[in-house]
Length: 272
Image 1 (spheres, rainbow, N blue to C red):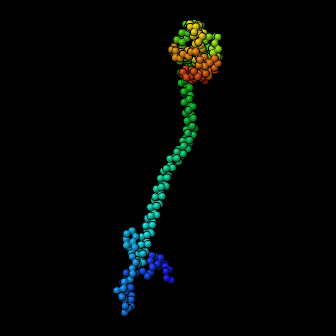
Image 2: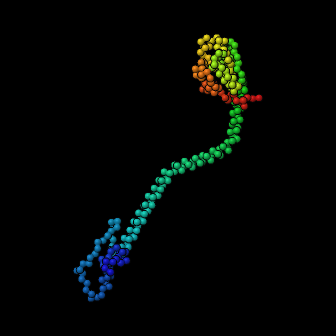
């Protein structure tokens, strides 16, 4: 039927009546005596090329072009696959950091568990040796637990000079008619039983030969000595703490000054 492409048309990429063979056999197959008008030009369609190479219009040329086309398609497909692999690799690298971090955290947790079980005996041994070192250090440090009364300025001087090198001496200067001094008395009575390595003393301001103005405005006062040297002078504490305060308030002042050392006051460190 006119205008309808046959299978050969589709395969050859052109209509059959445009096909012209270059083979000389066609002339040989012609019957003798047949007239062939060589002056008549047979229309030949333009030759197509793939990748700049001319192709024949015969069956072999068309098949060759078809194979070349498939080769180019395969190469293009391979190139796309390589680009896809490169993209996947790039994405995997981008995500690797988070995955590695998560894996590292899991490994760290597992390692910590193993170390906890493995180092249990080592930790106990270390603690035992450390306790022995501390006991050895404080073996000669005197232990107290009460507040010592001082009656004169001489006793005031002697108690600070004759103390053990590791003993902190806190002298409480007070007057009986002060509300803040009453609060301080209660705090120190408790603290002396908690901090056994600290020597607490007390003296009335007028017995320490202090001025009347100090007796009225400077009390309660805490004078802290270490190795015979005054390291902290906390006077007129009612201006800081008021007339009513608690043990924690006083301890905070002393801890800030690094005057209280809990490791020297633990009952478990005292040798029997």
